[in-house]
Image (cartoon, rainbow, N blue to C red; front, side, top):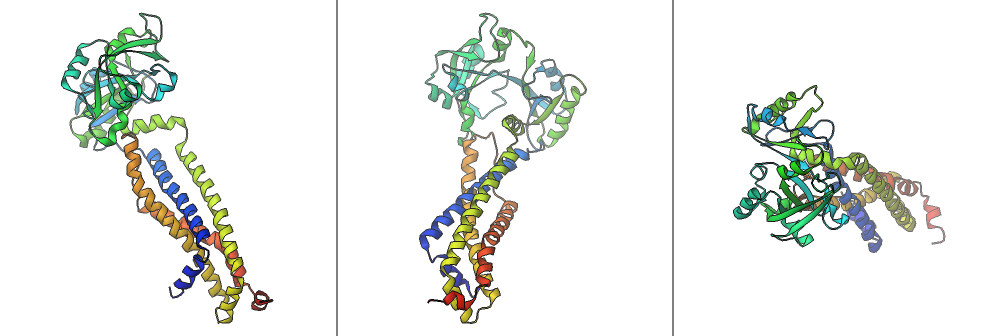
Length: 389
């Protein structure tokens, strides 16, 4: 540590170049911290232990339907408090570009009761229960599409045909607008919820089937046991189920876009490869400019190993300084990502394992980019370095 002042002075010899290099390292490790959280969130779905609500879907595919005859069987299981069901609709309002602005789901009885995160005024809830073609929409989607209570809107489906009209267009009466109970759940406000009986009676195919079940357990401590009992009901049948947490189900749905772990790993590899090229060039240029200074250090008695250590320490300090700031910023920003996801994905905070891996990468990259300039400084001959000076 006694040479820290020399290392610091050398590092900021060219302040502008060093600052821009630090910003590059900062950006790389900011991405590392956030992408590692994404990788962890998508590769480690939470266990069902301790949750009060289970998602029961097809073991084959999340889009595979289940028979409605499972409902009374699930209700009769010990530990089950309440059961409801839902079905994905898949459509858009006015413009196909709005397909991701508002998702449509047909919901069974008690669905809203079992989801207290949807806050709906009592009068609007009563209207929903009494209106066959009634629908409630999230506040975010309503604002984005200019929809208000009392509107009668057409939704053009991409899957289900209405057997009454022979077309894929369904009409709904907007009887309520719900809001999320918490700010971090605002992502759920981009949904349109309508009555499953209206949907089931009107569709041209698939009557008597549901997309998935939502099960509320009496004792969260027994949730894994209940999940196993539910799956045992349809074991070795053509409609085997997979009971899991709703968060795990959301992750499974989102992972259909591809192997998230592989994508994240490839991005991080490209980022670090570019970082090595950038910082390697910075260190090579810095040492090249200081050849006479290194020769003077050797003249004053610094050994070859001392010069090697000084240059390597400078390189490692450069990467560690920028990387630590980047990881710290990622840790601060992750809660915002969780809020933006509306509770669909729970990005874990940056823990000790990520910090240790990050520090190892910082030191490793620092050594890799500094080794060639350091060897050049170590092998430097004083006479050659000071020739012509």
